[in-house]
Image: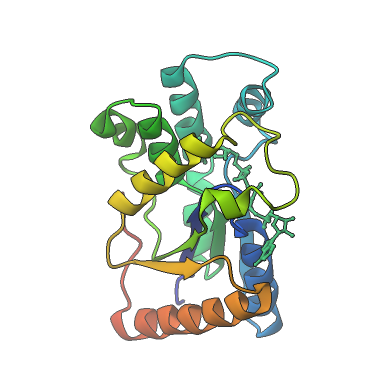
Length: 206
Ligand code: Z5A
């Protein structure tokens, strides 16, 4: 049985992660590849509900406490994610541990401390970074409703993301037309499947 791929979308707010991750899952399904869409934070769990209360500014938490809750929200999904990948399902994930580090480090929490709780989580095979300047993102629908949607902060978050990139990341110009972005993501995804076919790499950890 060939394992599924773990494909991750990261990026600043309103960069089109949800739009593109949804389209990718649909396209994979249409071409006969079993795929599942996951989103972090998963606001449906008990931990996710606490995170939602914080993001929508209904409750207050210290920077450290919310950071650890975001991480715990990923850990509670780990067993199912591993089982899915091992059974051949490709996971398309909308935000993950890099968001956790970028947002908390942008609040000036220590970078190494921010990374520590996520050590041991499953690592993505490919990361698509949806890159948009916060000034352009702010023009999109729904901007400004949650706690982190502020210009200066989003600029700092973008810098933190760039500091974490390695060769498994592709920077995608998120300002382009959505159809054009989808086509580019399909090309990059096909490349990732081909590489996995050749390498037969096992699932690795952060
Ligand atoms: N956070 C954290 O601090 N720590 C963590 O560990 C994690 C997250 C995992 C909630 O995340 C917050 O949690 C987030 C980071 C923090 N805070 N911020 N900022 P979320 O993922 O639930 O929420 P979000 O980042 O705000 O995602 P979003 O609002 O869903 O945005 P998106 O998925 O990137 O974009 P979208 O919904 O696909 O598109 C946004 C709008 O733009 C929409 O009207 C689209 O129709 C439009 N759009 C999309 N693509 C295009 C193109 N190409 N052109 C023009 N318009 C477009």
